Length: 126
Figure 1 (cartoon, helix red, strand yellow):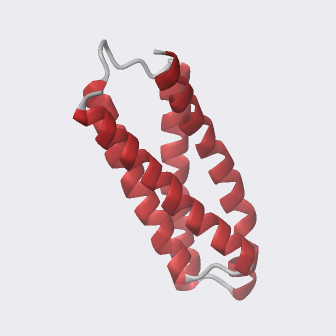
Figure 2: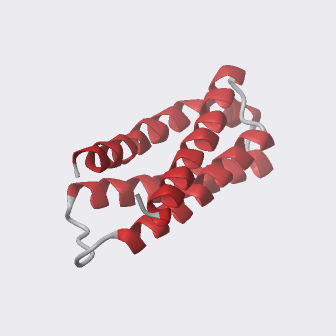
Figure 3: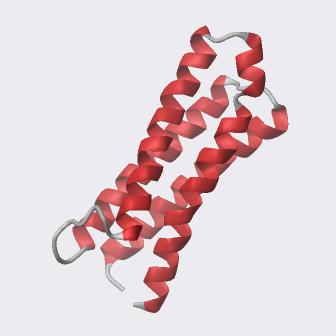
């Protein structure tokens, strides 16, 4: 196994750990706190880094319509929107917005799991 495969796998797994920490700690607290937002951003940054490393491994042309690529792109954009939105809610949002934000976090996290486990599956069968 190449070093780049190991690095990309570790980075994507760190994205899972930090994003999950943010989502689940927020869900348990039922209140969006700055710490949760930091976890969202760290998870996003690890995901971007891992995705970039995996892109370096890929052979062939970039195909946005390939299912793993498409779901990965959707998940990355949703993570970015989610982190920006969470940042705005913590800075300027109402108390009720901070209390209800966890509903959206879980949805984004569940969507993010699709390319995570899809990539894991692809790595095992190839």
